[in-house]
Length: 192
Image 1 (cartoon, helix red, strand yellow):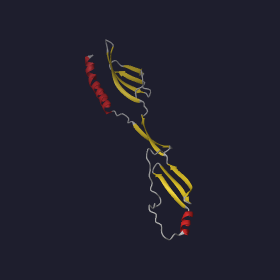
Image 2 (cartoon, rainbow, N blue to C red; image 1 turned 90 degrees about the vertical axis):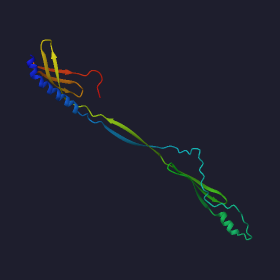
Image 3 (cartoon, rainbow, N blue to C red; image 1 turned 180 degrees about the vertical axis):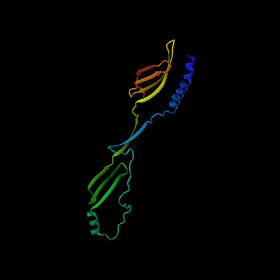
Image 4 (tube, rainbow, N blue to C red; image 1 turned 90 degrees about the horizontal axis):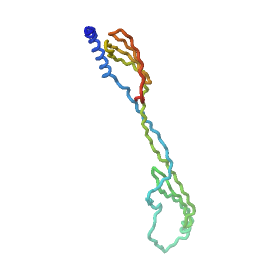
């Protein structure tokens, strides 16, 4: 019996070295990360927070009044009847463009309009998705040492690990000449 063990010892060492090399060089499948970028347009009211916007006066203000000895009544009446159109911008930025148009005639505002363009806010939402590759069937090898008290057995084994993590095995006992087959099933949660 010892002589028989000594004869198969080099084979056992070679098989164990192959298993060790296979485990050391095994590479995990890479995990692919996909970034999707969605653009969502949000339409909302634009608020000016506690800020008063002073716009320059669109016409010239004369502080002094000079009375000339010659008074041109026709010119005064022409100026009085003349229709003046003013455009008063309130805001013009990335959020909105707001302005007031006014018509002045006979020393008063005769007509006015209000225009506003509110630009929608754009919010970019980024979501990361991790894609785990699906599991595949995998061929595995190993060995079993067995003893029933009288006989020692050495069984090189080949197995197939399925997608559902069940394992089917087939082995041959080189010492006793027996063929072995087995089935293993997972217990508990599926590993990721």
